[in-house]
Image 1 (cartoon, one colour):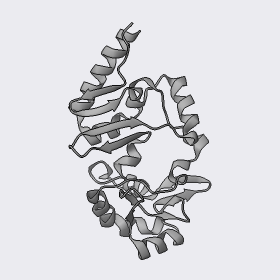
Image 2: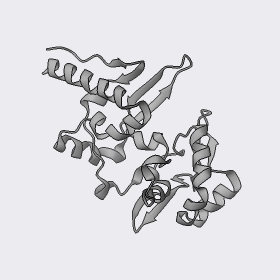
Image 3: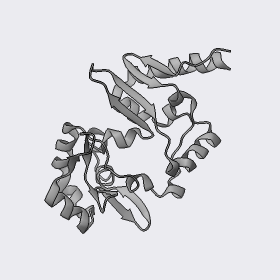
Image 4: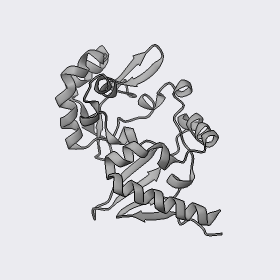
Length: 201
């Protein structure tokens, strides 16, 4: 039996092997999108994403709560958190300013508006950090990028659903991983996963 190494290098991107071995599939009917609400900071964003958000802000504005609109008016769409990382602003210390509600269900207003447009696939949808969750991306000073699997208690139903479906994290996140790193990179990831997991079995 071959032991899967804890860290893998996929074409210069360091990934935690549990991205290949752990199971995950969002169970929205149970979680109601709570990841947009829980936590003590907003979603990590890049400067380019902040510019993209500002470009669509007028279209997204009607979907936002009055409290979120007030926060954005006063503080903008993003701020630097305690670690110096750029994150979306939050309302009442928890909700992302781009959270909107359909009854008790939390939705991303950015994604909702983008999906209503015919060209949704060719424009900004939402921050890549949101699309990649439960993968968290870390950038190192030497330019390397690391991907870690983040375990959050609010996602226990997603882990259970993933186990039932036999869906590993990297397969569940196929589209955002391709959006972030490209088709060729994702294909290499799949090939490495097949080799390692087949050897392990």
